[in-house]
Length: 172
Image 1 (cartoon, one colour):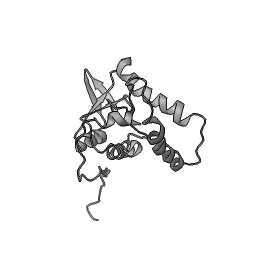
Image 2 (cartoon, one colour; image 1 turned 180 degrees about the horizontal axis):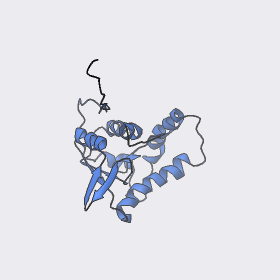
Image 3 (tube, helix red, strand yellow; image 1 turned 90 degrees about the horizontal axis):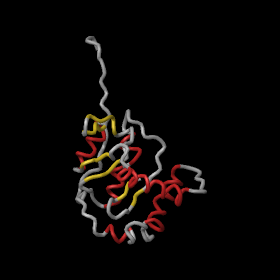
C-alpha cells in the first residue's frame, strides 16, 4: 500500500512475495506503478521499516537495500523509515494498512491475484478516497488535488536488471 501523506489518497496492490534478493523489491510493491497512479513523485516517502527495504541502521542512518535505493534515486525522492518504537510515525503507516484489511478485504475471498488486484484498484476510487477521513475531516480525493508532486514527465518506468557474473574458462 502506498498513500499520499497529507491527502491520505491511496494506491493498493496485493503482492505474493517481496524478496530482497532480486527484483522482488521493486516488482512486489510496484512503487513505479503507484507513482504513475499519483501522476508524480513526492519529495519524500515514509516506509514502515520493511525487511526487504531496510537492511539495518547505523546510529541515525538507515541502510537501504541497494536496488531500492537506486529506484528512489531514479525517481528523485528521499525514502524515510519510521523510527523504531515511535508510535507517531509507525501508526500513521499502519493505520492505512489496518483500514484496508478491515474494510476492503474483511470477509472477502479472491480466486486469483488478478481478481484481488482488480478489486484493490476499484475499491479506493469508489470507497476509500471518497469517504470523509476521520483525521483530516476531508475526502482524500479532494485533499490530493493540493498535493505537491514532481511530474513524472516522459520518464521511462524504472527497470531492474539483475547483474550476473559468470566465469568463462580461458579456452572457451
